[in-house]
Image 1 (cartoon, one colour):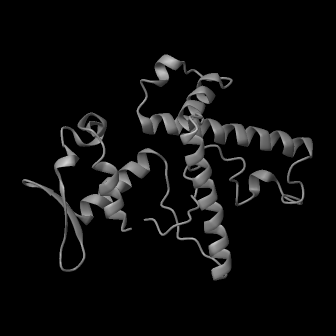
Image 2 (tube, rainbow, N blue to C red):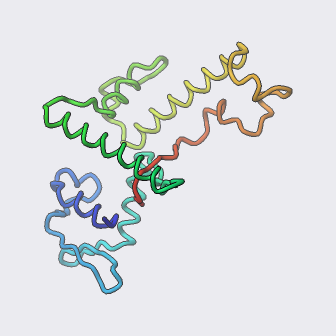
Image 3 (tube, rainbow, N blue to C red):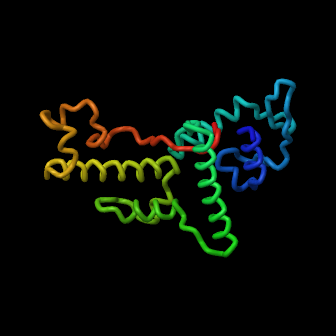
Length: 199
């Protein structure tokens, strides 16, 4: 399925209230999907047009506020390895569907992140003021806390002599060019692994 068509199938099912955070009072259930002779897709409702360029801007914005990097197309060594990997993902999806049909509740990653941020040591967040954060601020706080904790744990292990001693032998850890393990001010985006050809 073309990414633009997937975008349309997802957004057309949202109510105006759900999509108003990004799009104001647009009702996407009233938009029509069009395809031109060059196989470019667009959505139209009256004077409003959402074309491929608009879609790219929207999807890039949503990825950025949620700290999601653009998934790379996976590289498989052989057709057999591709088939095997896809069968694993298909089994996971079937298990998720069975769980949902049986009425079992799955844990919300967002609720776990809120709980982690509120209950972390040295944190100044409560359940009340976390809800006042914008989504990008929330994810920044969660990912930054995780990065700071990783840096602290790495340095504790390094100076105790139990972490990566051979990687830094003969030089100071502060002189190393790759300071990702100790630089808690570094970037927060993490490369995302993907199965499909998703842009």
